[in-house]
Length: 255
Ligand SMILES: Cc1cc2nc3c(=O)[nH]c(=O)nc-3n(C[C@H](O)[C@H](O)[C@H](O)COP(=O)(O)OP(=O)(O)OC[C@H]3O[C@@H](n4cnc5c(N)ncnc54)[C@H](O)[C@@H]3O)c2cc1C
Image (tube, rainbow, N blue to C red; front, side, top):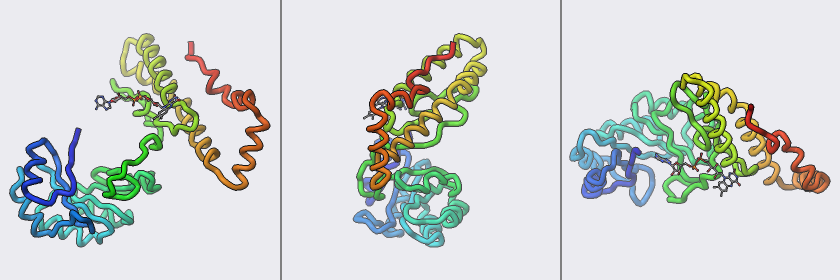
């Protein structure tokens, strides 16, 4: 695991964090009770072992100022928060290789994180630096593509997190395990077995993920949509609701 201790304000804390095994230290230049002056950070950075990754933390700052502070203090990287554009992020990244692009976990820009050309992406709580944990059970992302490569396969939440509105996360993980076991028994060649596993699972896990997202939108709807939803559910009744998911609950492992 890579550990970065952020909000460092003194040489004593920096050295203690390093002694305790931190790989990286963050110094905040954004408005904060832990905000640092560039000169003070430069003095601390000089005294740290060279292998420690030192990162300046910025929020809504212009690229020129970010790059200037990182270079003049001897920091190795920048972590940018706030309302930066793709152009801002790319401009910082081109000047500072270790540029960490931070998004609130609920920020729709996460979907396009790749466009920001980050060295790494940092997923923050809803308000950066507020110390509030995001509800990770609501984390959502696309199904890994492919699910397996060479001798490595992903299963369960690591491969395909599903929102909780269909209660299928564990069920899919168990299905994965069953299909993976079967594929390994059927193919002497491990990469071929894993490719067969990936081929057998991708469409189904995508379908379940999509259905869970759709339920999330429907269950949280208000106004007219909620009215229609309630009417449809009442009309379907328990059996009708179950039958809509015959494809899901009626699934059996391929023979
Ligand atoms: C409140 C709640 C209700 C849910 N209800 C349902 C439900 O009704 N039906 C359903 O199907 N699903 C449900 N789920 C989802 C389900 O719990 C998950 O989808 C399922 O546990 C995923 O299994 P997994 O093995 O992929 O991951 P996990 O169960 O998260 O297991 C991953 C394991 O890996 C370990 N680990 C992580 N990193 C490392 C590391 N670096 N080295 C070693 N070990 C590591 C973790 O400690 C953990 O033990 C629910 C989830 C929540 C939070």
